[in-house]
Length: 345
Image (cartoon, rainbow, N blue to C red; front, side):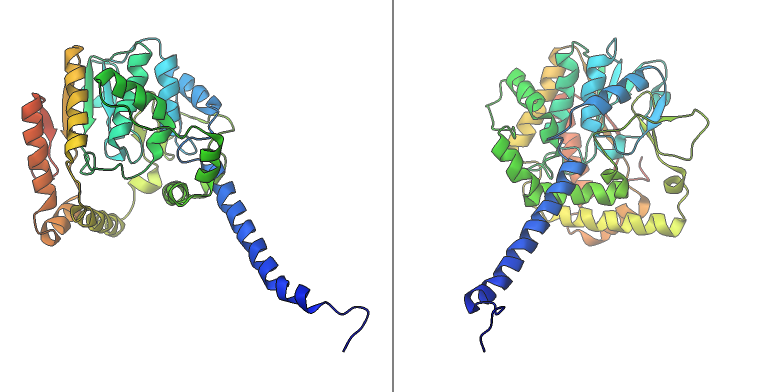
């Protein structure tokens, strides 16, 4: 049947394809919007929020810890702080709670970052060295994944220029470490790697990560308010009351999840990769030549986590990793504090 309003057969055949292409375009747009908003590797951070946050910390005030990129904060802090801290703490979330109160008698700044990798350590140290704020002591938390053959995430790229600069200081071969071009940024915001990073941030921070990591004002947390997560003036993290006051059952369940991840890590290849060990050793040697005291910290795992790993990893992954770190520390002449084993710690 033909008629004035009949849709040609060729057009009808193209309709599903057009619909599919439209849905794909919408999906890519949604992915790009989330990645730009969360910005897990700091590709689009203008730094204004970080600068305001750093100045507030320097004034001695605690700030709300959500929607703030640690790497950008530390960059701003290194530039703004009037003098170098006596002690600089480096590591992942496992060392974020280390505070000046724990050591006493010295000024300290905790420059730990979420999911820290070896490039992060080099980049953060470079922030302070480049600003002529060399600390007297550097405390480094040793995560099990620190010396893997590849960084487990790409969040360090927010400080890629600093990482490249310290590698130059150490005399290491040049690497292509920057996401520099506009085309690279466009590819990144719809790429799988950045999307996975954003999902990781959303899992950790919740929908607050979409509330504007790069804008808005700095929220000061009053001294008596311990209900909210807060970044204290020394850079250390105080967890929210809802996190601190979880039930024993919830804590143990989380500890089992951590154990499963560590068992998975134990099956990965490339742990203590020669290139990463050499880079790490070069960093420590450089700091010691500059008169900086270096201390390694092995933060203990929850007893449930440690037992889970011990029962399910053939080579007793945590004990074996600690042994290798202690041997490396002895070779580098660096003292080690703590232990992965909670009973020993």
